[in-house]
Length: 228
Ligand SMILES: *Cc1c(COP(=O)(O)O)cnc(C)c1O
Image 1 (cartoon, rainbow, N blue to C red):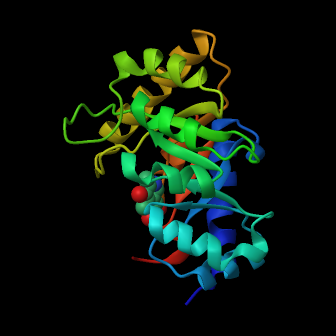
Image 2 (tube, rainbow, N blue to C red):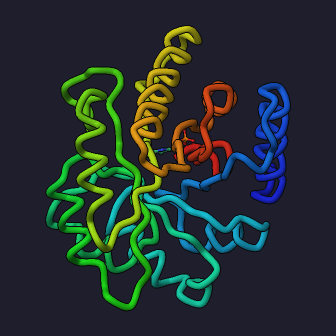
């Protein structure tokens, strides 16, 4: 079985190849390793293989892992990428560096209020729901600008961009259409004057298509750590 080091090299090679096909510099895409359900020691192994940015979905699991890896705290950037409930915002504000899943103002306000004074602003993305499924989290595209403006005004948050979790599909045309719709929302916020630099989309199965559609941050779990 391939080691994490080997799998990191494979994923980086996929990224480089997709970037060169898209005519983009390889360093225009950041790789976030999604370590949910894997133990802290697996994260440590990935760290020793050179990976520095990690994504977690579940607040308590993430907080526990951050504590277990406290010796590496200054060198790892921790991203919360799972759904956020109001009663979990404090732990996120206190322990994480980034949150990708802000989809309503109330959550953003709590994160800002609860961000400890000694820490730099929490870096946030607004999660957009471009598939129109009512059950999915994410703000609808036509409400993204209003939310983005409100979030950008909060004192202890820095709005960095847009995140999306497109519905899984085997249809490449549908996949591309949804990634493109996210890109359109991102571009519209930038055109409206928001200084955004992060388009968080693309996972193990669709990272090439996401790069083609302009992703700047991939969230990759399975291709690095195996099946959950
Ligand atoms: C689990 C997860 C990922 C990683 O997905 P893989 O298919 O394992 O690469 C990315 N983003 C979010 C929000 C996730 O929950």
